[in-house]
Length: 346
Image (tube, rainbow, N blue to C red):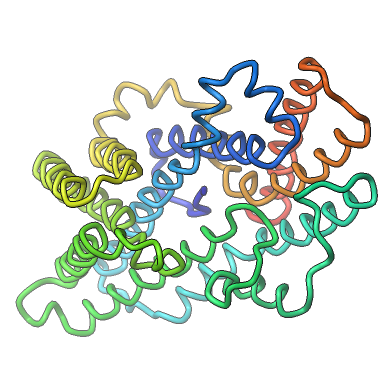
């Protein structure tokens, strides 16, 4: 899921990864939750079956990018000797995440209710209770184990947790002065690397931890290392170390998602070099899709639920009808995300 973080210098690799991954997530959810999916998958079982089954893995791309961009601001603060103020930074991040999130959740609830008036299907639901809404409002829905009101909303809460952990690491590094042995930036890097290793080798192997940041910090921490490698000119060494760490993690326990984590980390570590070749190519639509990716991710589920009700009510069944409905739902999701981005997120 896309990361709503502004960065000072455009990184074309990030633009491209966000654009591609966000669209894969949208298609993945449309294939999981709409009645168009069986008809389309029967026609194209290979490609669509792969996206339906494995599309969820692209979340690793956003985890790595999230760590890269968060590290950019944390290392900048520490290098300029500015105070790392935990609460203001956490509050700013929380509000940046939840403002479009609240709008998207409200729309998902409304569209589900309206869809239920048109046709009943597994994705429509009753209006949520106060406790369920309150849990979503503060991004606690997984922790308190209430039913999610939209697909993928767990990621928003995890993003906030991961950012909070990195802010606390930066604060601790600054307050301790690297224990008088290291600069605060080096202290932050070592803390992040230590937690990355623990996550990849231990915590990420137990799905019972998947509502907490430490389960995902392996990918996030590799993003932190990727930014440091660029910042300090250690691209080759960090690339080799990241590949070695992931190799050990996969040897201990094979996890397909870590392959995409590794590819993403290596692309970001080497993104300055990649920029020379693709920077002038990746413009216009790609950057636009990258910019609106978070809003598209947030809003597309409610649209998919309502579109499913319309398809069922109209009794659509042919391949042409289902393909048309699928494409319209996809395009409307992008358009709605653009409106949410310009109206709320930006």
